[in-house]
Length: 581
Figure (spheres, rainbow, N blue to C red):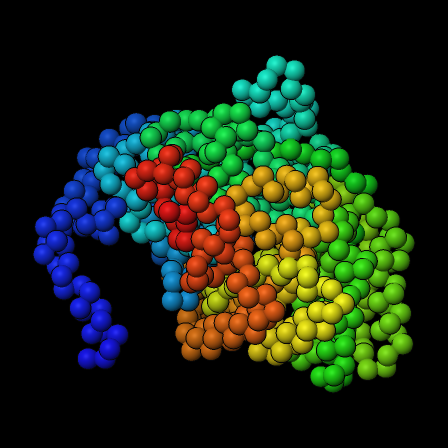
């Protein structure tokens, strides 16, 4: 017996008599029962719940395993909208050594807050685990659990605009602001269509159009242009939520303000079931734009110089509210530019990049593998699939299933997310001090050496350094780690493979590759964060095995969040991986 095993045994043996006394209580992990355990709901119990919720309870199935649905499933399994329509599947399919996509014991296809309140009360009484799902994208596996009652909000997806919204409980005379009421089951494409394409306003949502609006906001919520418009959480004005006591509450800065604050980045599904959100909307610029290009260095020395130069250029010309999205750094010495901008004409965007383009042209050790280019388009049509199809553009892909909303689209580059198998995923906020003249070369060395182990991206829209003071002030009033206010970017180091849904032909879990690439991600992360020790992480895009996760996600806000959790969910009815409390 080794020392570690011996110590574990020594610690556990004195507790065995106590464990024997409380065995009936800890069945199924302590908080919830598991199927087959004493006390697990009978069919009569489930039938009773079904009657209470108007027949909206069912047994979810993996459509790939059901002969009645298999052919249709195989035809559409790469379609994110199809996957999202299946309560037995999840958008993220698995995470190595962590979780797999598995149907719940039952699913409530909720149509109202009362449906959800009824289910929450029933689940507490019967000690059945609750899982909440809107979009189903959770990398931490929060969208599924085999021993659970799944509360599925997909049908609660209405989006309505309001010209002068005033939160409930506000003082008389409080001025109204332009806003949008968004159902908890809405995806961001639903909100973009209603608010931007049809309404001519901007709403801060996610980059992937099939992400659910509620979970996105609970996690903090970064979109492509967060330096300009803030996080999703910072734009939340009000929410309707079902709490653990079965109450339906409308919360905002005036009613249950601590719960409202906790919902703004305190972790998806940790405080209750959101049923409706109200977001601030913004003036829509005339133009959005795209910058693309891939530049290759011909030596290690040239790669280092290139990285240092592009970081200086970002600091001096792009670290402001007009710019977002990312640069990708690769160990073979090339950088992919994948940037978006708003509020600039095409010539203004080109001018912002011209010093860097000129620098590259003056150095023969660099080659544009993919040409550098800048394009603009009307901001109102950025999420308009008809606009792209009329022009023969293919980087937006529609949901072509009969009878589905004609406006539903995903970016072509996001299609691989349907059922993705995550090998490893890490993130780290990088502080602005790394951009200073006396540190940028050290940062460049870290980027070069880390990218040789595993390539990664800097998402400049997921750090708020360079945003306006108004944007920073709103973000400061959220539960997110305050590090985000000084972070110029979120570094994301991740790797994964194709879908491995059970029943998918030729699906293969390559655990050898997963183990190898997971190790590479961790080593790359360790090297990069030597310049930012103890860096915080973004809840929604982080490591399942995140160390000291509460500090990483919420920093100095942990104690305040914990107090809110104790007040509104003292028994832990709502629990997610790495959640508060």
